[in-house]
Image 1 (tube, rainbow, N blue to C red):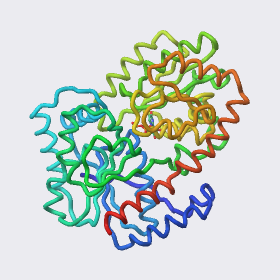
Image 2: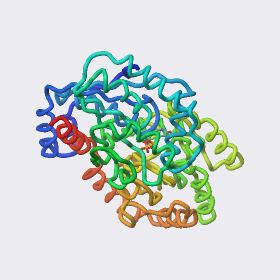
Image 3: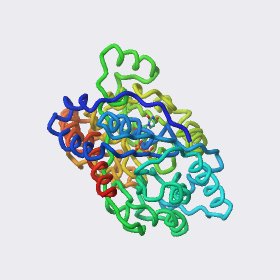
Image 4: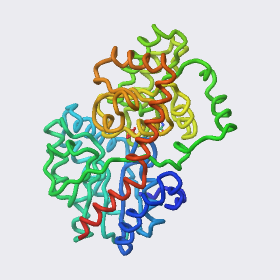
Length: 411
Ligand code: UDP
């Protein structure tokens, strides 16, 4: 296990964005946890939504006076092959789960749990990867409640993987899901729902000064900001459906010939499928100079693309929440997204963007064109989007909801 470095964060800095009164509930919840030591554990410090959330949640908790640590598991590719298969299995894709895979999982989670030093009053386990640590935690930290923060859509899991994860999940004190429907298939002692959020103060989400924006535009050459641009930002993962996005773009380009597409993806540390899929997507678009397939770009570049694209697309087939949707909406960019998982929480159809069914490529293309053809609509939806995210999907709200669950579990 290792502790990633954390940025400095002060809760006060959020007051100008959310309004000072929105922070009062959070402060009083934190005050009630001032003698509690909390540990968050996940499986990667880079790539994907959980690695995005924890560097904000943890330092803000510390600033609020809640003693909080974040540790990342140490594991090799064999383990991540198993956990990626588990992730896919929980989303309904049933690759066989062998005894050898289970043994790899148990050995790695046990070894990581054995490295834990010190005592905690509450342990928060993010996603299925570290869940096996519960075997040892039950012995080494008896009495410390364990919260499982499951970020995955579990509505249609493969039985085999659900049974495997349930061996551990049935023993947590509380499972937190991003939507209430996600917990219907799994038997856990108690459930809560907390919608994720974005951090408006990070390099990914804060406003960009003119000089930085100009430098970023230059770095993205030959992509042009004088021609219409559609962007999807996602890990290279089959569930993100980059091929569907490409197909929708091609149809939209028939109406808008100078349209460009940016497909931007990062390689998450715990996702061994990424490189292969990236290569397939890049090969597929190799003869299309107006398609830009980009990897591992800095947060400020992602920020600029979300801000300056005319439309952002998120054509996922499954999506636990999809922080990228709120990230784009916060920057006043309308989003065309699939009507799956957490996306409809964020996109209000015909108000902040459009929802399309995940297999409806033609519908996605139509919606992209409808937005590109109408600048006033984009501006109105963009303003609506900003306020929707301000109201529902900024960090202080999520943190208050999380601390409320912690208080309940510790009660
Ligand atoms: N992300 C990024 N660069 C990329 C692709 C993704 O910084 O090339 C970030 C993205 O901005 C978001 C997170 O990774 O903050 C992805 O979170 P999301 O909830 O959308 O999806 P997940 O990867 O967790 O399935």
